[in-house]
Image (cartoon, rainbow, N blue to C red; front, side, top):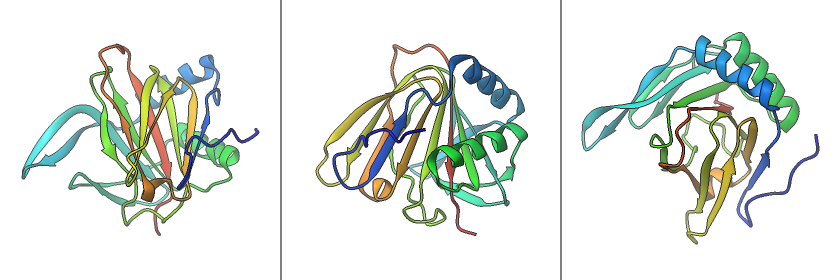
Length: 195
């Protein structure tokens, strides 16, 4: 598969494979991941209080990696067969190695993810992150941390977004909430954690 053009004008690379997975196969993966994953309601700590979000998450890895985000720590579960299949396919497409996966289940467009970057100390610096989308098409925004330049794209069903090099240190990304989307979306981000 040929590499698509870079979406970012500077300071990092983001490559979008919009048709990485055809519609019928994408529906299969959506249902398989939905049914076989151990979903938990996402929890965040805001102003010292733990809040339970409607969005659901799951955390998997080749080892029981511990991952902390929004002050909540999770321990990775062993990969399910479908996640292992997707991990290997992403490695073939991108040429990057992955050993963990964070799953997000958004029930509708009013569940989103605020501006952030995946540059926690537990992730190998400058490693690639492969983000798979199954289900409803959603808008996605990059914003440069210094210049504040914004790049807006659409993540469609069956797409693969690869973020690499200086993307995480230099750019935030966000899944904005929208009233225009009623359907669910599953997002899987494959990462390389420090061992």
